[in-house]
Image (cartoon, rainbow, N blue to C red; front, side, top):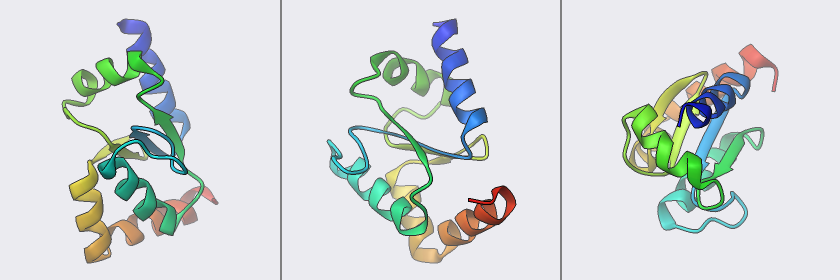
Length: 109
């Protein structure tokens, strides 16, 4: 379990924007992951994703690590933003665009 937690920490530290999801952005395997990837893709295609249906170790360890029980999970600059409902709400209010724009400027992507 500790190795998996280290792998998760490493992914979150090395990648500015991380989406843990079911499936891939181009072939999501659940409606919530589909919406999250679709919304995120409107702001950037430069995000790292992990398919938790393939990486079962991460699927079982991440909810314990993040204290967030469901997928997708969006992480930006090492901080958990939330799941599909939060992503969609932030998209509607413009908060997500502002966050991603700031991150793009800061990290040149």
